[in-house]
Image 1 (tube, rainbow, N blue to C red):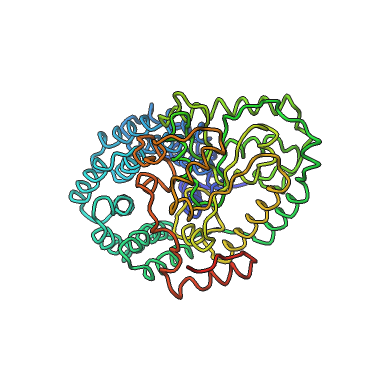
Image 2 (cartoon, rainbow, N blue to C red; image 1 turned 90 degrees about the horizontal axis):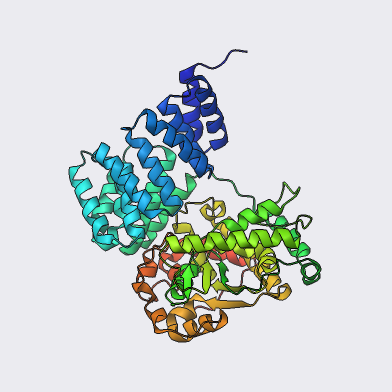
Amino acid sequence: MVLPDRQQLYTQGRVAFERGDYIHAAQAFAQLLQREPRNEHFLLGMASTLVKLYRFGEAMKILQKAVKLKPMMPELHCLMGNIEQTCLNDKAAIMHYERTLAIRKGYTPAIQGLIEMYRKVGRFDDAVVLVRKAVEESDAPDPHLAEAMTAIAFKAKLERESIEYTQRLLKNDLPPMVRSKLLFSMARVLDRVGEHERAWDSIEEGASLRPVHWDPDAYSRIVDQMIEFWTRDRLRSLPTSGLGTREPVFIVGMPRSGTSLVEQIIAAHPEGAGAGELNEMMAISARLQEDFPNTPPGFLAQTGAITQESLRAEAETYLTMARKIASMLGDFAGATRIVDKLPYNYQVLPMIQLLFPGATVIHTVRDPRDVCVSCYFQDFLGPIRYSYNLGHMARYYADHVRIMDHLKRELDLPILEVRYEELVSETEPGIRRILEHIGLPFHEDCLSFHASTRAVHTASVEQVRRPIYQSSTQRWKRYNAKVVPLVEALQSAGVELPEEA
């Protein structure tokens, strides 16, 4: 057997990485590291691939090894910053980005990362100063600076400049993923300046460049199995953890349905804390699966590993982790309620009932047309594959409704439905209902939730730092005929649409 030469193997790894085939990329870099374990470029390639596979601990260990070999290599420190940012270690992320820029002034990936961190921790003025200086000092348009500009365009009053800057870049021959990301970021600015149909065209082109696959029929079949499996009788036949705590509050729903807004309201209460979007429930579900390879981790479909002991251990580990994350976000002292706002936790609500029988759930609901349009425009960090196709998104929304309708009938957990449109139009009554549901007294601070200094690490970072506003209601109407295929797809999927105001 003839082994591929070093350059051929490296090229294979890079090409696989660029097209999103991270398994084969990792295999290529692993082979390279077997030959040259101290090669900093191979170490960086492997670490970058492991990050895409969400294996952050392994990636960080590789980077630490590489930094000892090449302490002045900026790419290593920048990737460490990306990992720390993803893991919510804000101070460490900022430190790594600043270290990168000390090594190489004007290194644009680090500038983009630092600007993103400034946005998340509320340092918008610092973000504006940094991006203005970087653009002035750059020799030519750069994709990282383009994305950084569009991220703060509204705050910095750089809307037109950022659109022009991105358009100049798009005239170049760019890799499909780079072009797609630029089109997504430019579309959001076009939308803010009122060029709605042009923004839609930009999103449509950007979505078409994504190498993603989603099978709505296969997903619907899995939902059928989940609905058949989780019944009230089955739930009552299973043990629980025995923990009666009311501390956990789970906000679930479709992405972009108002989960961040509700979390920020609760976190503004002296006894409330927000832990952001935790993936731990999905990890617990995966650990409790014994042998069900065709079921996504989000759907627990076996109960053989469920004992009171296993549930209690998982519940206590979860609480420890949630408290730690809330503290890292500056939001735990004195809290008696901790919010986990991962929207997809609705898929594991039966398991949550077994883990925390005393928990409370809030289900956020918004006009399906506005939810889908907002998802279409949001270039999510995670693998939300259905959002790049309007038909797939409509089907996914319909399945979400099916799951929640079923679980509201079968679960004992108290579930409060919060409608986004009602919350923004009648804010104080809505806040009072939310607080009463989770067992907290009303507090005036919840009315000024936007003034909170806690870090926000989701796509809604800027929205939740503003007072309540109603401009996002009936957003779908802005796009005129462009939105017709989405409306038809929702109707075809059986989704009930509110009457137009």
